[in-house]
Image 1 (cartoon, rainbow, N blue to C red):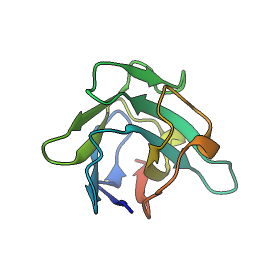
Image 2: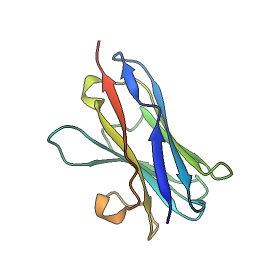
Image 3: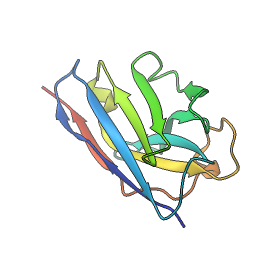
Length: 124
């Protein structure tokens, strides 16, 4: 069983940047597609980005395309989300997760092993 721990969240001003990290333990994630989601208060968990095994393929939600970049370091068992040009509407708890059946998938039902999340607040 893999455990995921997100970190790197915090308070940032509009237009600012943050880099989120997702540390995996328990087993290697090098054979798994990985994804990032977020959940704002009273809203459903929203897909943001996913990355293939080697990192060669990525896919983004329209809401973050061009602003967020997903990456991974399989040697370190880590996944990252670089977030630029942040907006107040990006405020949410951010989660990473594994897509056990692989592929570019966006539904949260296709993911498991959710971490505890890291809070991102964009405000002046």
